Length: 100
Image (cartoon, rainbow, N blue to C red):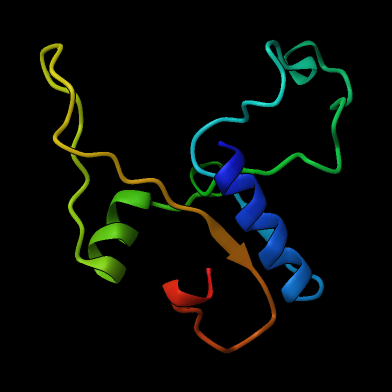
């Protein structure tokens, strides 16, 4: 988790006025205060997931990276995991994995 947090912070600093998107749910707190209609304890670290904004990670992984997501089935773990992060930015340039 720390690896992804560091990478998203790096991208947000590199591209002004950008916001990173996390994969899956937030893991900062053991129990989220927002479940109880309270303000987030860590607003500066809060990141929305790609899915929470309507993004289809399965389709994106296929279309952009030619990677088919694998899911656990009948109690068996998938052959591999695919984790992704997103970046909302005004920049037009395309990042390469070498920059990360």
